Length: 434
Image 1 (cartoon, helix red, strand yellow):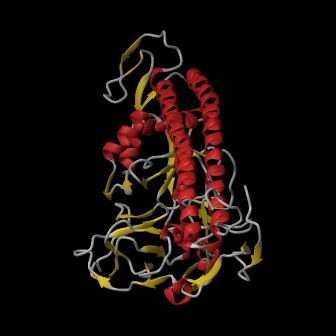
Image 2 (image 1 turned 120 degrees about the horizontal axis):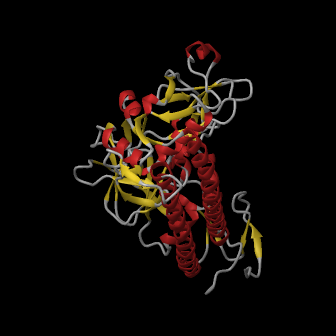
Image 3 (image 1 turned 180 degrees about the vertical axis):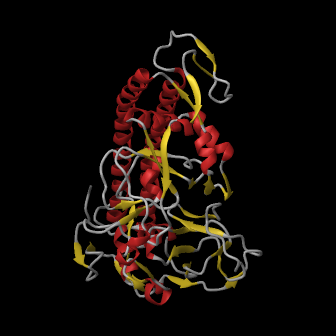
């Protein structure tokens, strides 16, 4: 990329050197804060997200204090003040209201500036670091930056024509990158759907397409090989247990600590032991169900998409324990355990869980223990169980590898997007048209 002819030291650590001819301005010289209190009855609720300011999301936490919100006018820049919402900001295209934890900035009138440029600047990694460095709080990993501190942050301010050229360039470039990301995401969706089909076919139809079939007697399972049986899960399970609700830290357990798993530990039917919370030694006596190698962990509650998710534990984890929201099942042999894991991923089982899970919202559904143990499993002879498990291990591993490659590409594209924005808005290269 072409650089500017000359640079100077900005004297601001997060900006570094900036092009000659660029100014430094405090945010308060560019924006006024908007602190007018309004009701969400008069001004529709908005959510401040990583994708910008949008109508309130269904998953957003709702409060009873709808009259205690901040006014947002179209064209305002809104940024969440909390460090755990890093990157949640954007220019609002709508009039509305947001929670009090957001800073609402209105571009100063009669000021020759391009808000789109500053929107990109405020989204840059360097600014985010500086913004939250200015914050205050009583917890190391959670603090807030209010307007009093934000307004004094120095930002790079090119001439208006350059602001517009940079914003126009980034509009095109980020749209191009976002399109490539979307393509990869669609490919991942197709691979995930293909994975489900491969599993569903194997655990309901077997691996020999020439065998005679018969009606399973279960509508959403359909036909199964004539020598298979349809059996409730409880007849395959040897033991089932769950843990207790224990308050954990916000970090994972260290080598010599004990931890309690989170629901994320079984996300997407993969066991991730790192998804746990460290437990204070004074609470160790309340930990009741250690994670066992060769067991199947199943989520009792989760979103409607993931309730009933099953993950296989393939290693010992002596210091990890179950919460009350996870069940641990054991079976008479390892092949049956692995087979059931696949069977619970099949479309038939997902249909079953979707029909029987209950909850106040789609974001937190529950499945009863009796319903879990009643889920019908299409079950072959013992020697075929091992063959199906081996076949699925091989096929799903290849699919998972393709998905990992696509996800790695997405991560690289998003990192390139972030770095490109940061370098453009701080003048590390000259965009076309400048």
